[in-house]
Structure formats: C-alpha cells, structure tokens
Length: 146
Image (tube, rainbow, N blue to C red; front, top):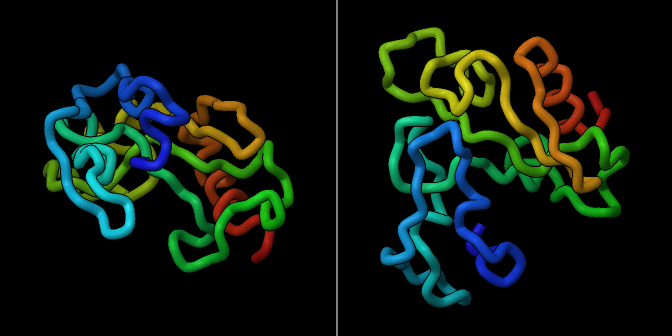
C-alpha cells in the first residue's frame, strides 16, 4: 500500500483498524527496486489485532489470490460485490488450531469471529458478518466464475 500514502491517502491512520493495536512507524524505511524508499510498515500487515507494526488490512488486487487477473475496471463484473481491501486475517500461532486464514473465526482476527470490514471496487465499505463472509469472499475472488 506504499503507492497510496501520502499521495492519495494523506494519513497513515487510514491503514489502521481502531479495534487493533497496530501501528505504522514513519521512522522505518526499506528500499524497493524501481520505487525507492518506502515506509516498511506499509509493505506488511500486522500479525493480528495484537500485532504492532504493519497495516490492519490486506489488499486483494487479483482474483483467486495472486494467481488470477488483476481487478480492474475491465475485469470486475459487479464492482459493488467485488472487494479490493479486507480486514487483515492471517493464521497465527495463537493456540487456536481451528483458525482459518481469511475467515473471521479467531480471537486474533481484527474483530474476532463477528465478521470484518470489506472495501469494494465501487468505493463503498461494508461490515460483513461471519455468516455472509464465505459467499461474499467466493464471489469477489472468482468474479462469478466457477
């Protein structure tokens, strides 16, 4: 998300969920080839809601994880049903063997098992409850193709 800050998104706090303890350090940099110096914490997401450095969100700019085509104005069929950014949710060594990656089911997830926030390609953001998560995720990552 280094491309967005500060040119398009003027505050680093936009990359942080208030329900977490995540932070973006503006004192730590790394060099990206072809880009130059960027803020290190904008290149990774924090390790769960208790994690410190890194963003609270994941950018899902391609269909089918990172293997499909990029989500663009030409490839997205229904922008209001296709998310681009979601609450960060990686499987962590929390002792919860049932923790599923990219599904709100663990105390380590930004909002626990209640659900999570999704930002869609038409510009709206929405709270998605756990009960609707799988259907929303499936369409958004496949563009309706099965």
